[in-house]
Image 1: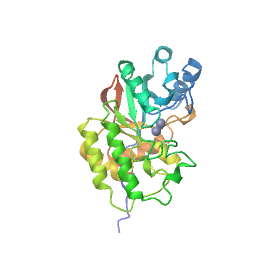
Image 2: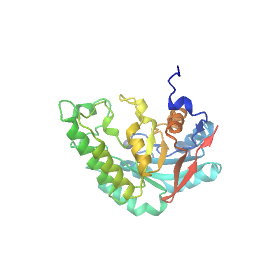
Image 3: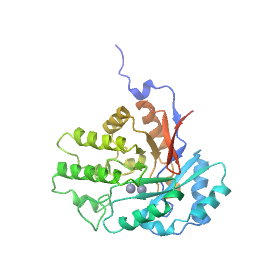
Image 4: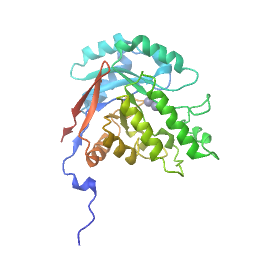
Length: 277
Ligand SMILES: [Zn+2]
Ligand SMILES: [Zn+2]
């Protein structure tokens, strides 16, 4: 009798990822860009054989971003492509000024991530751990999912983002919908495709209670069918997290038949083959 063989085992070629397009040099507060802050990220990239990274600090910390310091870092590390980016979210308090800043600096930015961190509470990101799970307790989870993906479409519609981050972050605490969400996901992916945006494959979900890649396998399958391109991302909040779990991600991508990721330069997207090992 034939043993059961998984897609993972069938793919004999393994791949090595070379790009991380979701990183937070400032962490969780304003820390102005300096060579001292940024160089460890370039060193980490070199250590794990990454050749293309994007800094994507949260828009509420835009005061710390310094394009001259990024240019200087690029000069000091010519073998590494360093992209100037930012993560714009739907913060009810700060995102208005974040959007304005992005509009003003659009031509200096290579890459803008769009994300949804807020549901109906203005005072707390729903992905806060612990604490954010309160926003799900005793609630209609189907309605929360529908509301979340509506907000993702709103973010895609801003015209200010190149790529959507952690597309199904709403699952972070492990609350799952009862209803089939294919229709909502399809509508969202069709909208993302119509806007010609990318989505990221983020290993951050493996560090969270849900312990699952962002986005889920079903969403990746649908995105592949629709021809939506992917970036590879860790959402590192420290240079030691850069490229976190990338060998595992490469294996998953190989199983899905994903052979390329996209990179961005001044918002222009190019596809690059993932390296074979
Ligand atoms: Zn985020
Ligand atoms: Zn992030």
